[in-house]
Amino acid sequence: MIFSGIVKTSLIDYPGKIAAVLFTPGCNYNCFYCHNRHLIDDFPDIIPTDEIDHFLQKRVGLLDGIVISGGEPTLHEGLIPYLKKLKSLGYLTKVDTNGSRPEVIQALVEIRVVDYFAIDYKAPKARYHEIARGESNPEDVLATIDILLKNRCSFEVRTTVVPQLSLTDLILMSEEMPQVPRYVLNAYKAPSFFLSSDQSLIDEPAYSEKTISEFAETLKLYQPHVVLMF
Image (cartoon, rainbow, N blue to C red; front, side):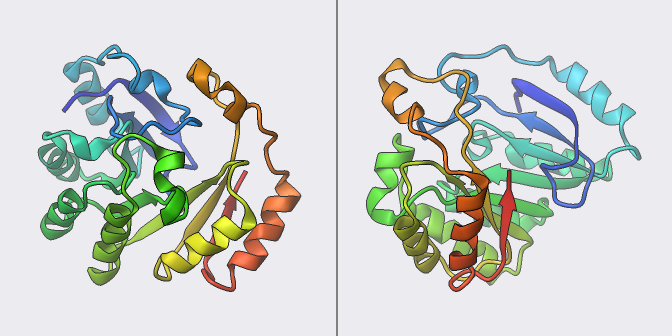
């Protein structure tokens, strides 16, 4: 397993827990608003394995959990053994994923090495490839959500409310998904690094907190467990 970034202490990435976040390089999507573009555009610097191992050993008992994020973690063959390692150290584990590989999620569920999942649902099915680009396929994401529901896993679904999504889009997304235990609406913030060809998309003004809050009240008619992240 290789990592290209680390947040040593986070109070927001694992709900209700103190966690560290490890970032994997590479992604099969190409979202214009990605805040981790350095992990997917160029092959980034790799943090030495022994440095990560030393950190994990030192923080046993101080951190509740470890979040594996990216990039897209499910692209890495070493994900399962690494999660087993984290569990052997006593950590709670969380995986952030775009949901594009339901077969990997199924394997993770079967061996019970993940305590919490976060799945991104990025756009209505008809606009999914427009927003997420790359190898994105909404049916894979919905299959991932279905697996987690059927197996009664702890998880959340997240949507970044980019300016290109209307309330009508968000309602449609809420209808396309089954009812989920936690639906997080993330406010859009323009990334520091982006493709020059995406300048016009980046320049679109973000929705205000008030507007997103109003969206949330409407979406609760379809997804009762909406949470806002600003």
